[in-house]
Image (tube, rainbow, N blue to C red; front, side):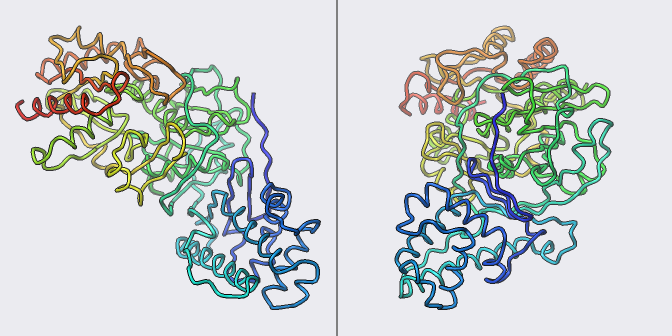
Length: 551
């Protein structure tokens, strides 16, 4: 069952108070001076929204029973030092309300958008245009503030007064198959500029359930309007995925730029993607997420419904990876996707513990890819197998990071719900070229967070190893809707669990080649589900380091 969403729109402004999203279309109306700002339709709508909000009710301090147009008139008079500004309200009352209005606007995630195809001069310097807008807003806010308070400030805080981020978008021509024409009007994100640290919030903070197949094509239900949808063309491993999202999911859309490589214009123009995701679909079969294989066009199509639950970034990330993995399983390239453990098993913690105890024994540790990678079966490769990643960033729990790692990445991170349980940060990890490079495999360990063993354990044969890896056991830590002990086929609910019969022979071949090559295949005991202290994990990390040093 979908949820309705109220929004406010002018030619250049879109706001959804329920989601806390505001977009400003600089191609439709670019504010470059105070008079453009104070006379804009967008400002009137922002004030109209403010006057009906709890911010105004709580902080009005006497500024009541005025229309948005009357409010703007008062601000104009204050700006030009017209004494009639105070005919009905004192400077203190106007100041209190004005500060509340300013805070109300800044409570939104504010993103400016410029279309490359409009031939405007600002498209050639969209970052500078956005910076000038931010400067204009804060400068004129201070002018009015200081006029009302009667003195200049001694301390200034250079906040992002206008926007948090800016996008350069463009139209692309791509050979959309018959039935996909409704997508061709949506603009593609071409460039992204963020102002980190970005502390963004979503209504939901965990993922529920497993994505399922449907016999209809989700694109048949797409009826999105051009001005309310954007497409992030993502390079996920070697797959090209067009991620169409409703602007109310702008938090997720921006977060993608720290996780998946943004495809260039040359990589998008004239290209048919390997998969398509429609995120924020109004009409779906129930309140769940689905995928569909369009065999006629060899396209995987996913859909995620519009509701509060799917605001959690994990839905977007995991559906992208599901589509990627299904594409790889069906691609005929003899690839299998292998994970060290499900969410919360202790993969990131083990790597960090290894780094903490390594001291000078490891000169450098580099995270090539985080969360999902693949073992590629290739007879031309050494040993007939190599590893390859999908994501250029890491979507990790703040609890999983030491304070030093968290703070060292603060100026690059996108933080989601930082004060809540399962708080997450998305940080860049490595360059796309290195992520998709062919990496030889020396060791493969399953992150075991439920047993009380210490150190690492090497499996003696393929069957013993497959029993643990395929069972996919872990003790849930609140990163999903699961509780207690759980078991997921091959520790991966995003591709293999949907197609186990197709995946099993690939798994068999992977283990066969790894053991034939003498690769260390085992498990590391992380203790995250049994012992929250770091002592046991560090002991396991030390044994893992010893194995690496002596092998």
